[in-house]
Image 1: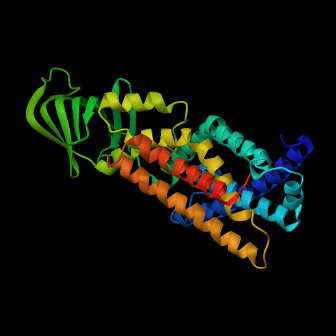
Image 2: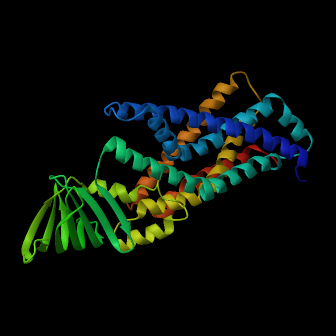
Image 3: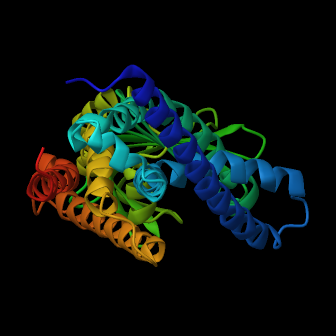
Length: 367
């Protein structure tokens, strides 16, 4: 027996309205706190207008916003079930001969559509927003002039010099174990973008506060000057190993559709792409996670309404949501440190939540 179309549309509309309400409410709270934090950071700079801060807060919103969508799915489903229970509409639905699995179909359909939409469209658009936010933060708040990029032909790195000039380094590959660049050249420029020198070396190793070039050949723009060879040449730097790691391991600015190619590029260059692999697999698991949120919400919300049940329901929802969030973060950390396989780290939270909800529902419901 299929659910009647009129009833299905009514349940889907009720849940969709509640979902959008909870999502906008959570996004508003996130935007408020992010904007306050940006204002606090901007107080150290007198040349940053409030309009720019508000724009940066909006651009940063997808960074945390995509993390709270499962919470919105969960809380809105619990609230919708509570509303239907309180109005005794679920009693009427069950009296009409419909099982819990049948009237869950509209909820599951919306959750599945939301998961596919987030992975295929919202994530790429959010990556563009977050990338723009990173650029504005880099230009206005951090004032850090170092830039790091990676392409198929290798690593490109720009860092300032103490004399107000800058240097651009290129390496064909990278050994992350000892932080060594291979087949390196460095181009030096002054503050007016005039070339002032070049270094070619077999390797350059990042140590504390310096690049150590081995078997270096120094070139000067002066006419008639011969290249100078050095066994070791030291170039001061403010970059650290964490700066380089964070530049390539942060998945917020990378679209879902570009992740596979970028992961291959990191592997060819010598970087560890484990965090990006976990992020990619976690995005693939998003629709299943959203479905599990609906089933978990149903397991704790479909009982008969009781006095004080709203507070209890809210507490259970918060507990379920943060338990899944903690489990996901913990497993992803284990995966990034190569303690467990990437697929296990990415898919386990969704699979565990889905199977747990199914087992509880099959135990409590008789049809």
